[in-house]
Image (cartoon, rainbow, N blue to C red; front, side, top):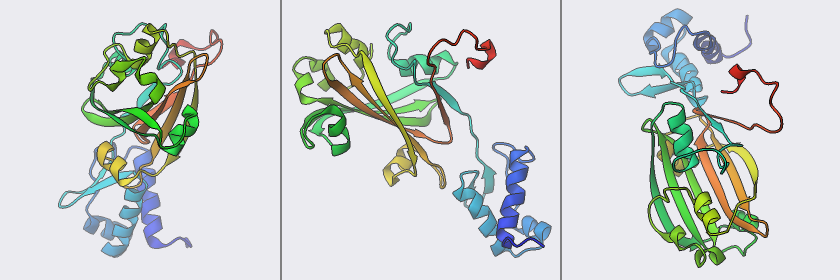
Length: 257
């Protein structure tokens, strides 16, 4: 006899069935009453097992509609190519990459002059609380929330690049805009981390229980100093990030997805 609690056994069986496709993305699970009969368990025990799967991000629940297997249409982001100025693009790299895989990009903007949080200030080598320009994008893929992107530009850059303070998009992308002014980003440093979302992140990205976010911090550098720090927050269940580094001539074409 299994030493696991009954609700855990229920969750494990259903998880295996989801993994092997018995219940595919978008499929509804049997009712609590049907599952209680199947597993010879109380409805409270079945509900606890289902709630465990909800907390793990495998299923979602809707009042009156039961439980549904989450859909996971993953978007693959090539982070090493994302701001390559030699990569042919019309507009910024986000629009190019999303359109390039046959999907529809959409984004909204907020621009403000604000104080610089300590996490950002350390990377921009300015004092915490110093003035910076924040350009905040809420990005969508096929109308589904995909990411938020918060980019801080240091105060000294504002006089040299006044369009950074203008509301709305910069059509050619901010990296291209700065390069046109002789402020070329010659390198960047990336940091990647995961954690559970804040309530605001869960709201903006429509994240259900049990789904983490992927935090991607990129600090861009000119030859002299940092020129911006971008924190991109992505839904952990709908995104996969890859990097391509070095000579990949031996790579199979089918791998380069």
